[in-house]
Length: 131
Length: 131
Image (cartoon, helix red, strand yellow):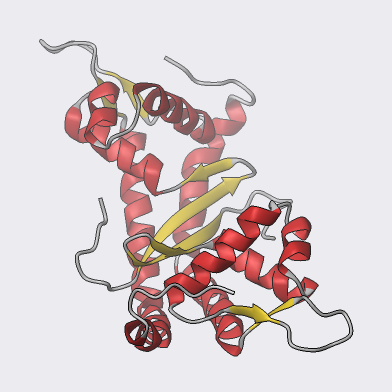
């Protein structure tokens, strides 16, 4: 959900908690969609992710963290949905905080990187370099 | 090339320069391997990447940046190799600098995230959560 209409460079962060235990923008976006939609299936549809992949990722997140970030919704008239646990909410919030801190810290270097690239890009618009 | 024997959380950064124009750890690792190995094919082998994928990624990097990060090696007795251009060297260097700055900035939050996760993980060692 971080599309840019303008071409300001931005960061996506993947947090490597351990070997093969990664939390990145895809998992966080899924958790946010579950919070917004109230079910894993609806969240998957909302972010154009297959039913199976959404469920697999939720299982992976719960496994990586050793505790549930997503749980079944108990009661309520709709039933059968899922919600973020308090831990899930804090995980999303902490990831987004880390993202903001990192983005602020590297802002000048990202702009410098952009300026290294853009002047040449503009003068060769659309031309693919190859060799 | 950032494997961790211990389980300190770490960051991997993807820089989104524009829509579908991304520089991340895979491309940077490939550039570093080209610098070390002196050819795209040898670099691919060194980081367990197929010949085709390595060449495709180099083409994509050059395209994204609008200028060559990798170029043919001119002369030399081996011939046929590739080198990073001065721009390619600066791209790798800037990416690694951004990575260091971001890692330093978010260190405390990463440790906090780890402490949110680990106590529970230890008490359920090896048990996969599901629902």
